[in-house]
Image (cartoon, rainbow, N blue to C red; front, side, top):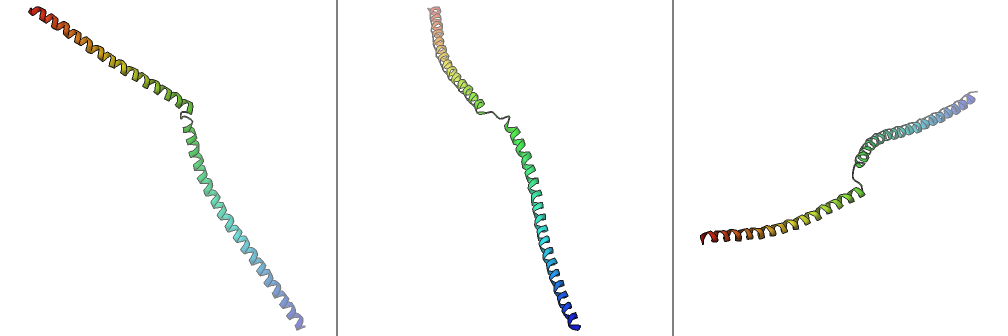
Length: 122
């Protein structure tokens, strides 16, 4: 009878040891998965916060860029600048011509003035 008790005790201890090892392995895997899951959750929250900030900044940039001139607008501005530059060139040549005419008129007035002075003296 004692042999049966020793055998049962051996098998019972073996089953308990196996169950303890199985529970320990299960707890180890679950905790490892929980730690990984919590790290992923923290990483997701951090990325979400950063993306929310980036999304707000991107929306602001897009709104600001909506007011910028387009290619066609810049083309019209350049055409107007070129037109003004051409007119300035035309004005510059007109001013030069007026300067020449003014010098000629001044010379004529000086000659008339000299003639009148000479006629009074004589």
